[in-house]
Length: 472
Image (cartoon, rainbow, N blue to C red; front, top):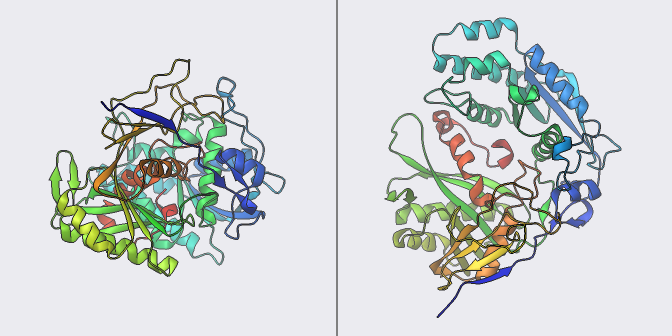
């Protein structure tokens, strides 16, 4: 009788400036500096624009000032896996500086806030808030030298006027639209990556401590400003096109229509792109999931490969598709037709939870990288969170759960170990955080956030940018 088997996969390594390697993003950034577009170590100056009220601008200017110096973690949070933020500037190991000037400072006036608050409908208040930000973004873009990234310090009164009071998790939104998503679309329209700052963060009441906030702001801003990754994987296979597929419903108009959302397409160079699928006409529904009709699946893969060819100048040798739902026969056939003569293919279902657990005899949970294979070898349970030897700890308080990696029984040309190693690697490529890793691979993990932006009614008439830095 077959039994479960287990093994531990090696921790993926990351590449920083000058080709130097480390496995921890923060350690790599502090020791070697971020990877630049040239690949070399060089000091960068990032021009920062900022929009807000007098009070919120004052708060974000103080945060920028604080980030010039080292920021230690709160005493009760001062752990080995949370190194202090090293500060910015020419002497900083991070090797970049924020350049803030008054010409990139746009103030939302008291009169604008007063007029906004007097609008009776929350939906109309949200539209007015979006219009205020749009005007200021256009002013910044029209500058002789526009900023690289624009921070939007949301005024407290604007936040309160556009946030439903009954929500447990407060967000600026109406019944049909979301402020965050609309601002991301506006940033694409004018060509300026944006970073929204909530009032609670500017008040110092965020659940993250100040050092953690500074780390994440620095990494995210660097990625947006240099239009490229601060680090890359060292062992992503050459000639492989990776893509994560997800679904979203458009807001407004025909609520029953679903589009296909491409969360990301990854190349071995570290480049990644967001693609929007065509309207799905032959969509199929399973229990809690969506599937594509054959023609739609074929068109989608052809679109992925067109973008690959446009950036690489050649066809990939291997195509890897990640999806939350299993691959139905009609859907699978469409993907195969769209792939044409590609030599190798792997279609993989990724699910976030499963009742299978690995129990440790010690005080710590399973090692990150633990791969447990089911007796039939049809699916595998991968611990992307867990005890991390490099940190000598498990950096969380909850009990980790493995993700499910299920290769398609008909289309899987690679070993389960190889597929799981790639999954593990993709948990270290979300530049919206400086954490050691995320639970889900970015091909799947960011799909919900991207889909929410693409779902906005205004997105249907927006010329969408393919780069992830506009969506984060």
